[in-house]
Image 1: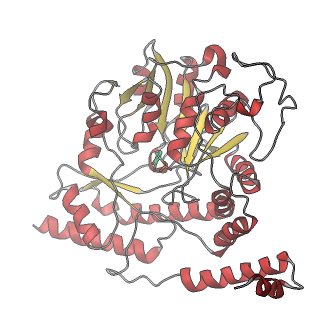
Image 2 (image 1 turned 180 degrees about the vertical axis):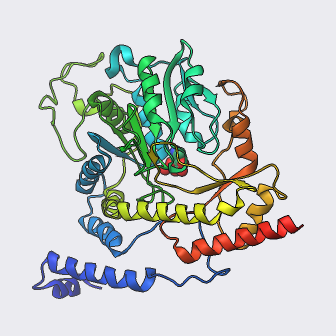
Image 3 (image 1 turned 90 degrees about the vertical axis):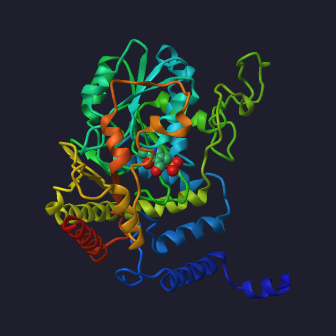
Length: 451
Ligand SMILES: Cc1ncc(COP(=O)(O)O)c(C=O)c1O
């Protein structure tokens, strides 16, 4: 197409007119290409998770693409404000994954901005032995020692008694996840942290929307983290966030996210501090451009505005998504009540309203089958399964010869490693899929019991 045809087609039309056409076409496209497909038992797959979206999400993405701002911009500002409001916290900052969120949340605890509160290499950090590796890795990357405590069954979470027992004079922080959307007792653990002058980081990557005593998880401790990978409660493809009520921690998180720079201008902005050429820091000459002064050993973990645009529209679906997850969880819980002799069924922590990420089953020792045989059977019938991530993390190959400590023993984490798995509750599943899953599991158990 030549530039003259482009001009003649555009003649008399404003960019807004063309944009409106594009948005209409996007909606039409989504209906045709991404519309609901009927479920066929045995043929359609029942995934554990997946992105759930409609034309409004694609329109928001296209809107941002047309603007072509690319780096974090107005959608990111909007997302951060709306996310913080939804959680009930002062500040939320986006990053490019949940793992990055954990990394900068932990790094923030080492910031000189915290003065005598900052934590240093050699400190101990108490964490859960069973879970996702990137909840633990930041402490090791910063030269500290993770101290693993066993988790409870059937909440699959750390418990206040073991956390308190594991504290030594070297302990400076507790960092653990609200497992599969089920809150750990963050109120009691935050009290313990306060009493012992420890930081508490709550990894809420699997728990957006979960509450304890009617307060959002992540707001009991010092910092909370989220993931927006497609498996999670809302998605932006890759993405995450760190949230906190503490302005100093917020500043430290932002600095570590943004190259470690001392300057805090938004992308594309200059001289927010009004002293851009008037600083004297480190051994640099007076007036060295503040844009290039680094007060922290940072990273660059920012997101694009296209990711944020998807996040903004996904947030509008969040309440429905959480309700669907809770509904699917209770259908599975009800439907498997008669199988409690074979499985330990998951249970919510007292005073918690979980925002379930998955439905975790632990095959009892007495069952006439193993977890692995059942998992294979389900996958053959197109029912997706996952393990509780890395299981007992001390058994992972990358942990060999690393510096860590185990408090007591880890029998439950080992049971989880050998006997637990989870199936999906994500909003893409409805009554038909859940009934199919229940039928397949019941048939399998009946045949196994018979013999
Ligand atoms: C508890 C927990 N923390 C952190 C992460 C990492 O999130 P991401 O995949 O966005 O890096 C995950 C991933 O699922 C997770 O389950």
